[in-house]
Image 1: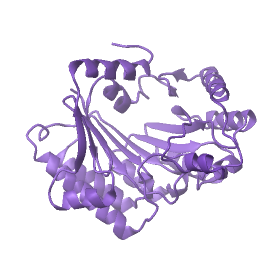
Image 2: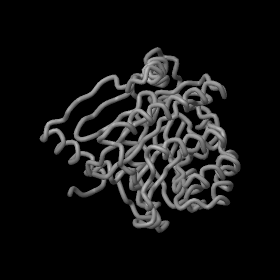
Image 3: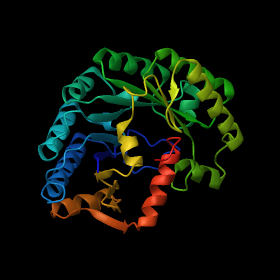
Length: 328
């Protein structure tokens, strides 16, 4: 099977109101260095396993949290340390998530030097008032500065994430943002419908009555999404999945996603990360303290697992491939 790696960087300057991922806002150089050391120790544990020792990942994805909160030196050390045990394939894809405010020339140079091929920037919208209402720490000017720096560094693919259904969003704010993104001419645009799971600050604000502005309804969100994809197609992009439109379906194919949806093996590294190996789903310890303790004791930090039946594997791949528009 194809083989992918995922690395979770769980640190953020501030938690977005809608965020349900494991993240921590207490950020310091000592804390992030300790975490990188732990990931490299976890990599070494997996690298000694006979089933994984000789496998070369075709895809490597750094998600968060905010991976771009790391320094240029930390980024280089992390990628080089992982490749010591899992050297990448010649034709590879490495995606690194960047937040507008923490992206700079030095970090981008380190990413390019390390072989990163795809930058994914979480913009969400280009409306400062909407961004503020949803707990985003960046402004529109941060997006423009970061995007210009990314373009100067010349990565193969630049993806911009937008969200549909943010607090304070209107048709005007959303489509004005979309049109501005189209004008930037990224190779890929990903659109997410905002959900509000129970473990988010936004859900708690709705429950306790402190939220004074209701989120857009599901019909409003779906209509905006349909119109957004229509505008992307009119601008020359091809709708590739249920989430994304790209300029070139061959050059800008998101291999990490396509391989996973067709049953690829995935090894997740870091706190709370998920893996899927040989038909077994498993997740790492969800608290940073427990994760660090396990790795320090030279134990795999696995917290829970489920071995899928043949029927469950069929259902899994069928549902995932529906997002691609066809099932193989």
